[in-house]
Length: 476
Ligand code: C2O
Ligand code: CU
Image (tube, rainbow, N blue to C red; front, side):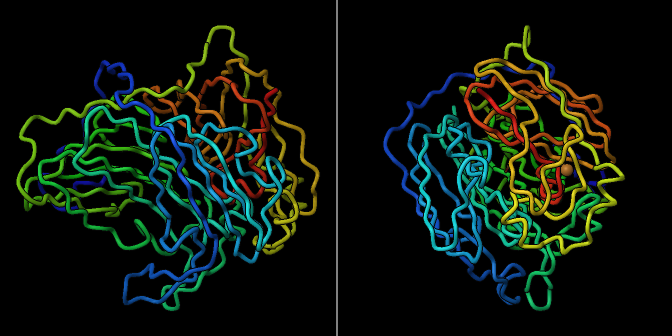
């Protein structure tokens, strides 16, 4: 709530609407899949950015290319050939978040590949099986590497059944910087790592202040929101325009009006927004806090496109396999704080200690667990046992339960899962790769374990991940 306080009048437009009673079935793909190769060279290095605007100080960010959050657009059917060149001072790797690709391309150091050391190169080769809005990022020392900006956006085109008048990606990310000098401050604090995470000091959208998007008046614009922050949860809403949710984590859903959508770290939301008439403006907000935060202004430019009523077409359905609930295997994962004993043993070490780079990417401390087990902390370099053994090809129903008073965006690698129900929220049934567990909530998901390998499951609130809330499933 709180939207009424923003500009006083006429702000109820697209908010307060319910979901349509009957979801429409998603149509098949209209475009034939492309062929060929998409070649990508990613040079992970330190570069400078002006996060506080052109007159502000310079920040030594880490990026994959000359632009922040390097955006890759490719067509469904193309093979991605990505070469990572590590020019950082520490090892890294690339995890392709949300992509259903072979395990050896999943980019998890020590689990699916050796770390890519400074000066080394590593090639990734795979064909993304689904269209949608995805992203990529490192998977070790992530609090610091992602904290410095190391992430990219991967858009796989080919899911549209009608052309849009614009297609824009908006990356939400906060930064831990000193506003006077632009230098980074400690990425993690003991207090934050034990609770809701350590929040950034500066909020940005596409690496700067809330942008003003000038889009074709009266047109339908596809807005792809990506929460690439390590900590912050947003409540996405819009004022001054009609908007519908058409995909969640890149997966098409039967379109429903955007009311407010809770977007945790790593989660994505694709909207279709009816751009206001020439001279008109709509605003995207984050309503999570008491005072709404402006994310972007959408301004109508030029002659009006479409006088017809707003009725966005659904995206085409994906090839994500439908889990068979009858006879499915049963799994349950409890997300909890570490026991008193373990917490007492935790050392008051610098949470950013480089030790985590040599020790399965976990910090010195253990704060969190999955099924009472924590990912091994500092110094331990033996891979733990999997949280569960899954049979290749079998469907599974998993209950995720949050036993803590904090939110946990839970991400499963390799499998796009169906979110079936929540004990606390009225969620539409949808496919996702990351689901937000709110305090004391239980969420039931289902998926088909259709590819072998060791697949990570962890909290994407990175300080939780790196202090224990991480494990893996073995599919064989
Ligand atoms: Cu986006 Cu295991 O992470
Ligand atoms: Cu968490």
